[in-house]
Structure formats: structure tokens, C-alpha cells
Image 1 (cartoon, one colour):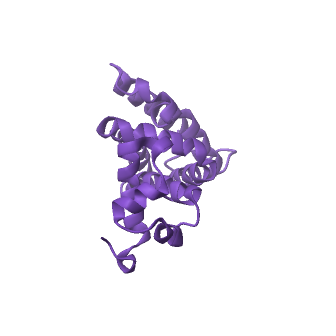
Image 2 (cartoon, rainbow, N blue to C red; image 1 turned 180 degrees about the vertical axis):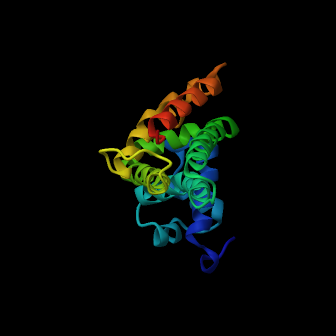
Image 3 (spheres, rainbow, N blue to C red; image 1 turned 90 degrees about the horizontal axis):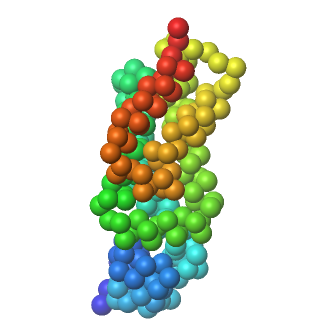
Amino acid sequence: MATTDALTPERILEATEEVLRRHGPAKATVVDVARALGVSHGSVYRHFRTKTALREAVTQRWLDRTSTSLSGVVAGSEPPETRLRRWLAELFAAKRRKVGDDPELFATYMVLVGESSAVVNRHRADLVGQLARIIHEGLERGDFAPADASPEALARAVFDATGRFHDPAYAREWGDPGIDAEFAALVDLVLRGLRAP
């Protein structure tokens, strides 16, 4: 039996993820999470005041894994064009891994993401912000051509244009033959559009 002294939000989120993997979102309850931790459900509620708050936190944690891994690309020292290409490739790879490595958990998170629009909106804003930092540096260095749009607007356009390769709505297509060539062709087109003449 775990003690509530050792109970942390991170331990609760880890247990919640495992309960979701086993039972799915429709059947996973706070009581199940508490049971997995060996504590009362009241102990879980001391850290997460509602079931919704717990589900949003576990969804945020899942999405943050992608954001965190991509932030290293943004901070890199490669030229902006190289970083932008790498960032898009790593985003696509991360999304594919989430589908392929644990399809049951991916399906569960798609339900949770549908319930957590504010969490998803923050995640998208973070990703677009990362793209904007790369594009801003490319504009400052003269690698990308100045445009009438701000780096943020350009980043949103790039994010939207590449949606087929990171939006979970397209997950069924990510294993199709030729998808990698289609991804590379789109990234080449995007970069040609940004590149200074």
C-alpha cells in the first residue's frame, strides 16, 4: 500500500496512463487509478480536484512529450532551413511512433484530446510558436525571404500546410506506401516558398 506522503502528481499521471491503457477512457475511473496506486480516491483528488482535471493533465503530459523533444531542434545551431526541415520530420516521426508503438493508448488519447480542446489549443500554440522562432531567425539571417506576414502567421501557414503529417485525423495514412516521398515533396515545396531568392 502506497503512502500519500510519496504520492506526487507525476506518480498519479503515470498510474492514470497505465489504467487508461488497460481499461480505455470509458471505463477508467479515479477509483481505478487510486487502486493502482494503493491509495484512497480522496488522495488522488487532493492533487487533481476533478476527474476532468486528471484527464486533462494526463493529456497535457502526453502532448508535452512531443513539444519537449521538438524544443531541442528549435534551440539547435544548424541553419534555420535545416532546423525547419528537421523539426517537421521529427514531428511526423513522433506522431507515427505514438500510433505505431501503442495503438490502444493512442486511441484512448484521441478520445481524451477530443474532450480537452483547451489543452490541444495550448499544444498547437506551442508548436506554432516553435516554428515561428525558427522562421524568425531565418528571416533575420536572410535565409528566408521577407514576407508581408509575420513569422507567427508564416508558422501557422506551415503548420496548417503540413497537417496531413501530424494531425491524428490522418493517422491511417501514415503507413501508406509513398507517404515518406509525399512528406519530403511537401517540405521541399514549403521551404522553396520561404527561401530567399
